[in-house]
Every structure is written in C-alpha cells, then in structure tokens.
Image 1 (tube, one colour):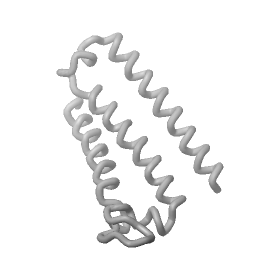
Image 2 (cartoon, one colour):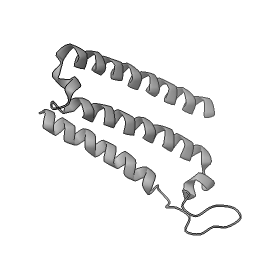
Image 3 (cartoon, helix red, strand yellow):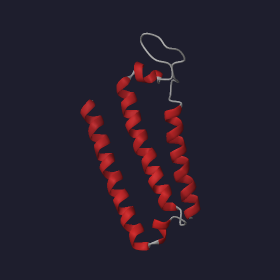
Image 4 (cartoon, one colour):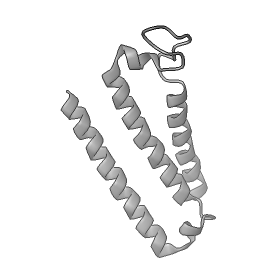
Amino acid sequence: MADTEARLHHGGGDQAFQAVVSPTGGVWQEDTPSHKAGEAVIAYKDPRSYRNFIRSNTVAFVTSYCCSSLAYPSTPHAQKGSLSRVIQLAIAAWVGLMTVLLVANIIRQL
C-alpha cells in the first residue's frame, strides 16, 4: 500500500514539475522587445491566471514532495513512529494553511 501511495505522490510531483517546464500555451521561441525567449506565453496573455497557476502548482509540487518523502518506509524519519506522526501533522497543517492562503488570494484578486 505504501509503495502505491509513493508512486501516486511521485506522479503528482512529476505532473506539477512538467506543467511548469512546458506550460499551457507554450513558451516564446524568440526574443522581441515585448518578451524574452523561454518565458511562458500565458504569462503575457493572461498574467492573473498565470500567477494563480504558479501558486497552485507550487503548493501541489511541495505537497507531493512532502507526502512522497513520508511514504517511503526506508527513510529515517518514517521509521520512528512518533516523529513520523508529528511530521505528518505538521505537513497537514502546512498544506491546510497554504490552501487557505491560496483561496484567500484568489478571492482577493476577483
């Protein structure tokens, strides 16, 4: 079960990473006075949506990373039962806080 969960968490992290590396709409291929090559097209076309995308994606990536690091029983902190539980609770609290901040930020920009 832990192995399946670890694969799912890694898959989420991989998807979040890939979404930033090749964003929706692609990236600019050449430098011009209005943009630089390699920057996301959507960042220029719809900056507000792009900021929300980056924030959401960052939360997803970090959450996936933290969950996958806890899912592997071979890591030192996962072998200690009480410390592992404290870390899990801390991560859950952090994810909850980041979610509240993300939603509040989105509502504020509406």
